[in-house]
Length: 169
Image 1 (cartoon, helix red, strand yellow):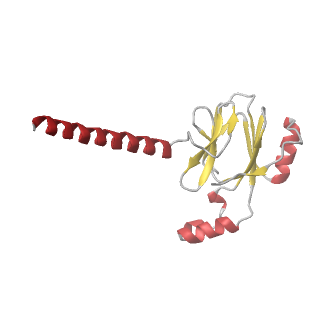
Image 2 (cartoon, rainbow, N blue to C red; image 1 turned 30 degrees about the vertical axis):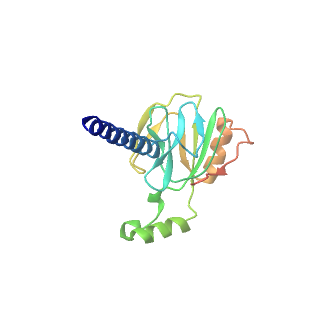
Image 3 (cartoon, one colour; image 1 turned 90 degrees about the vertical axis):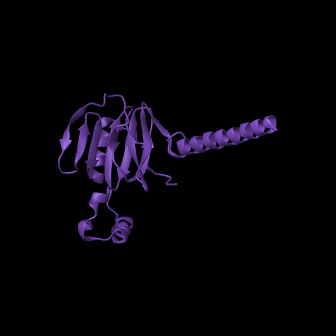
């Protein structure tokens, strides 16, 4: 009788441990960047989810270099090109409801552009009080479309490197 109780206890403990380990594994995987639909951009640069709806680009120290909402990107061994629409580009959003703000954001055609030169060190060089964001020595932007084209040329970005829509999933 005692042996039977002991065996039942062992079965219960085994099931509990199995459930516990599976639960922890699933939680860890679902909250991590290990499974990502976005490519590694090279030299420590990568996309990470920022909040529920968007992705941003971080450097090897996981410091946000370009905030969400990234619309288009392209990269090679030297450069990362990015087109972005930040939420703060929506005028009057302080007086909008959440759904009004999201609708205005989706209907907006505003874009600003960035270039990351991966061959240069990523040193913090200051803080931009207008966009409330740190500036880095190898990150150029934000630019208008015309400024972006001029900076591309000045940095020697290959013409074959063309922005493509990000795959938001």
